[in-house]
Length: 523
Image (cartoon, rainbow, N blue to C red; front, top):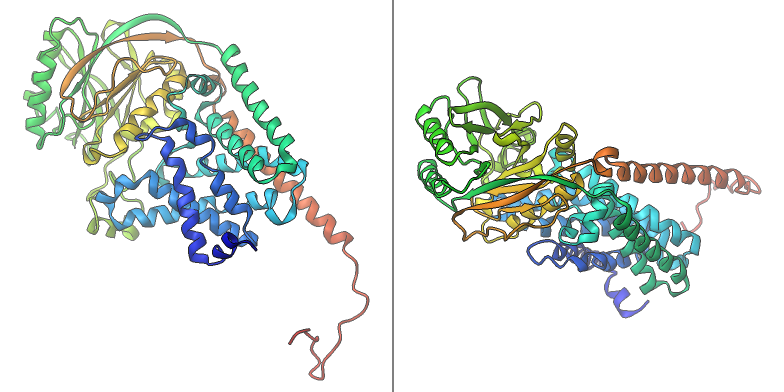
């Protein structure tokens, strides 16, 4: 055993190395945003797992790496959730244990993998990674924040691929490239299938670039984003938003968007505030989309609601947020995990959920689909809005609790993926930055509004029609990956049965001891 291998015989050292290796992919996301790093970031983790002496140890390597990945991706939660952030990272990290076990199963260092096994690994390991991303994308586990393919939000060819298979296709290809790179590094005798995998990946990207349908622009809308910055208190925030919105008078805007929690009172109980917003709509000639975070007067509980206000007051178009942020807006299994409120800024009271997505008819014939906060991380929500006829996607967010961290940039980048997947422009409006707007191909329009910006910015947003392949066929990449894993399970089951049937029968009965029990050699 070489010196490095001997050093890794310590379980604690190996787990530490696994956690560090698992954290490496985060550098591909904002803030560093080193998109190219994603294509090699998994190599150290893969090489560690394939060197594991047993399958169990490989599973521990997967758990340790998953812990490192989740903690690095969500490190900005530490000031809010404190030690509970570590608990969540440890729980979610376990999802990568089967993936690392499969890495060893196909690429084990001690078994000299055949070319056929390497080719299988190029399909099975990305499929297993997608299964992990699918499970952790459940809202109760935190949602699809940090999906590996989302690191490619600023790469034009990757966004074209997203229009074909969504962010899932990007994740699959990124993992496949990492597997191929690992083979090139560690298995010189199997370089041919690894190179073949890279060629297929490049050919797939080229074909998508050439043949995938492109969105057709059939109009434009002038959309204004109002970003007031960090302001303590709902009254002062409202005053600032009102002041910034008045600057839009005479700029011929079609829609004005305020951020998440931009209004801290139920408008039915505060007609004075509703009247002030309606006055802004009359003065600017544009409807105003606000977000109310308050206890409702017509039903029990606190809701976060996107409400459109026109010249005559609230229009009746309302969307109640459906997917709430775990611990931030509700506590899962509060009777069991309610102690989180004592160690951090977890939700003291669970907010209520909406029941369905809605389309909002703004003035000037624009139909848009609103989403609130981390709902923009869910590909299915934007896809369903476009299926229902949305011309534009709008996300309202507030990352004021995470200023000067990587969270605002990570959140803003998701709009590029949702735009490319659906072929619809995307407006991401926040209270405190980063606000951003993207066209229907995922290309950024104008500069991001950073945390220091306190302004009302106007964007000429192209409106597109047509249907992307992702909208038409949905999560077909995930379904294909699951079929690969089912086929693997069936193949392994048949193989186990055949081995059991062909195993040689014992030559005779085991020797007996004077106590009439089978002898156990070595005892």
